[in-house]
Image (cartoon, rainbow, N blue to C red):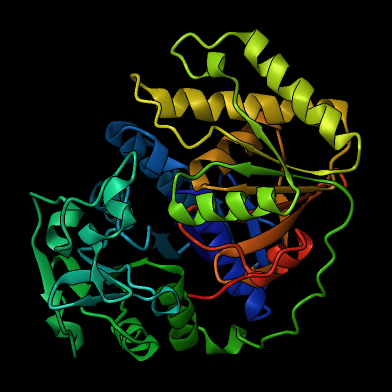
Length: 391
């Protein structure tokens, strides 16, 4: 078995999607919960949303549980643009699993994300010149992978690596542009190395080191049914563009009440918002709920907005049956799943890399989650009766 520890739920879903794509039995949960028959156990830890000290503590706890289970193969799923406490969490895991070298390959050729001469590019543009520079929690102030890693204790090597001995103790972040590059880096794994990186690197890690598991399968047919609630939990421009187009096409948009955008957000605001959404859903409509486009900047505002959004979703689902729940943004998805007290989820279908549909074991609810910066795939545009435009 391979255990994959992701720092947010959408990253975990990306890994589950890779497994679905190749017909590999996979389990998905918010903690170390092995499922009989699964070759890959995906754990969505949500450490990206924690303070660094808490993220380290949680990483150690998960690692200790895996060591006790005698799980030898561990992959650390990190954000493809290196947001979060990447170095701190990797060091915590490496210490527990006694790995002196860490291979970090965040690049993802599927989404135009590459590293050249130690500089991170998104669609040929330096990372700090893209919308990631405005990320509310981890803004990209640099495009240098060394600076993005924010590591001051251990050595950080970048560039090309061709032999196992090229990997040095500490961090190794190779230049990567193609899937062939990622496959080459996956070939350098041995018992002294902790692998970490994007879902694309995990796919090549499987292909190189566990080829007998990879059979592939036909994708399940699209089966979006009934009413739906989309939780727009991202401030990325892709999210704003989708909402604008959906509203133009007649989808109902429910904005967070102003009173919830304050440090002492009252319960009455949650009731007000849930009342509005419930009324629209009872008519069988598709509803998008969003905090809106304006920035909210009080202390701990992201946590307050995320929590109140999750509480509202839970109240809505208590009052009206919802078949399709679509959530974008890893922190928002994690908060909603926790608030709903959902048990293990069964990954069903990969709509596109990083966008996965999962079935709740104990209800008819179907959950679709997507990283905030990704574009909704064609299947979701069709469900919303919109035509997807290409750049």
